[in-house]
Length: 338
Image 1 (cartoon, helix red, strand yellow):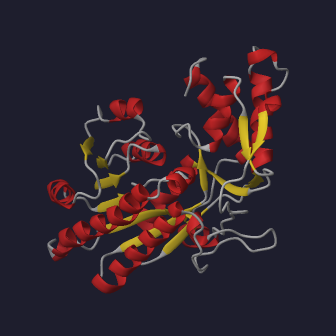
Image 2: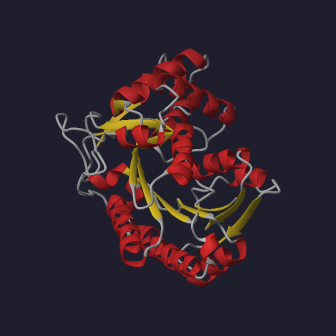
């Protein structure tokens, strides 16, 4: 089956492409190829006969529409997005362009393609929009975890742009009849993640003897999902999900940021004998810095719907997943920067 994946050169995208290759699908990667792309791994993936790469900005309608018509996908998985909250606070314009205009462009092109399909070929078509739990805002310690029924209260330019994109996807379903599904996932971790994100940032800084920064008091809580579990969920949704539905994807691994950092430093202490700058423990590098503006307190995902309807459940425990992730980065680093 032909599957078009936008943002296939990013962290989740690379892991997804690897999974789709194993499932014997033909894949078209549409990606602008930015700083966050994994260039080395992408070079390897496109050597596969079933993988095609088109360097296209998702805001470029003419190129997007031509790519769709030429490739003739049965499914479109829209992952392309600017995703780093700190960057969105410092420079929000690119987030509005990629996440909102880019999603609109993809929807417009997909609808035109879908409307021109023969009736016998359009029954299996799907536009799968991959989003985030951050659209819901944050929770207090006493609040129940986010369900698909939660209202949207985004806090950052990033989450606001993703919330807007979600609304456009729903509008294209209701108004134009485009077959869509939305998934909202919790914080991902695992191999190939860019060094600006918290887990690879901690590992990279620690190994270089740099300060390991923690915003505010470090008590912010995140719900962690291994990227391989997320990819399996995306695949299940792609083929078994109900058109027009939203599915929340999480693993119920709520953890304070300071505890996450402490766990990583403790694991590194056991694995790395030659520590930098004569420190005895990597935890000595932990440094509290000024909190981020509008910093969400807590995220937590209720995944009952996808577990019940699609029989999906996470397979990787956080303890094992974190160990595997740190080991992967240690192997990649070999004493070098990420």
